[in-house]
Image (tube, rainbow, N blue to C red; front, side, top):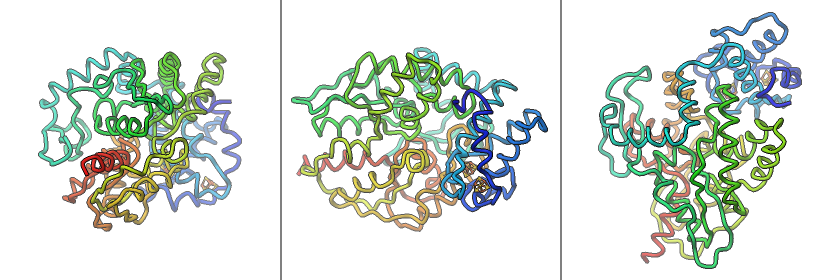
Length: 429
Ligand code: SF4
Ligand code: SF4
């Protein structure tokens, strides 16, 4: 039974927990709050009381379930193999079934389902963003801070909305001569609306490797923001929209450059749609041919090494939680980076430690999010590198905000951008 359908679905996971407290050692929330409710064990107890009928789902209880970045560090440190990620998703879905969705989230997820309206809103936003955002001069990124506090402070550094979305920059099918294969690119929202430079690098690298790229117009949000906040209805609608859009154009494989998008295509769509026979078949089919871009370039179509030019960068790599622990991908991006002439990779102390972004977590708990991020920034500073590479646009946002506020001169990019840069340098030479 899916975690999105019933709280009973996680009874076996709850029974596995022997309350040893090993999860305390790795939980980024517990490290900051030192409160039992912050750690997996505390929240497991709350769910047990709920299921036993000794607690009612209240807004206060739902708030406590929001205290989790879903980083999955507790999963990996648990001697009993408890899948806490399942427990927290089931608890949040139950909270929405019992108490409804917060009005701000309801508006946001409804907007995400209305793709054309959402596109129009983002386009309008890109024109008038200067009203709310103060542009910060920067040599490589278009970044800004809020002009006024809307509940998250004014210190956070954001990327500015792109003038043109990634999906409108390219035709739906980007052809190459004698293609090896046809690959569909799921852009995700952050790459489509903010970090179009990542999307361009993905297309550039795939084309360089003789791969025809398809960017289905009908795609939209992956639905992860909705599913991790318990809005199962919206998440299902978004999963179906994406499956329809990709099925219409077809491809030999699907690539993503975003850890949430990858998790959605590989795991979440099939689980959300388990009771919908028609879409479950589609979800399973696309899950079996979905790849993170680094995974694709190492395992599916090994990227060309000839033609790589020199890139003088000292790079440290941050592992996004949902790429590393969620999809088991940590070696692949490092293998790409170390293949690039001129790139020196220097590991930070805890590359797999959560950066504290976690989507809406950073908006609901802005102070806690920054406290978690500060540890990551300090680890980055100790590497004395000039570049942080990562595999997720949301982590890029958080890491950039951290280094910018700490006054560290560090570029933050997706791994694929450095590979694209190397191919470009190779051509120049
Ligand atoms: S480490 Fe695992 S078994 Fe121990 S308290 Fe945490 S969730 Fe329970
Ligand atoms: S998923 Fe991460 S933040 Fe959530 S309880 Fe586990 S270790 Fe803590």
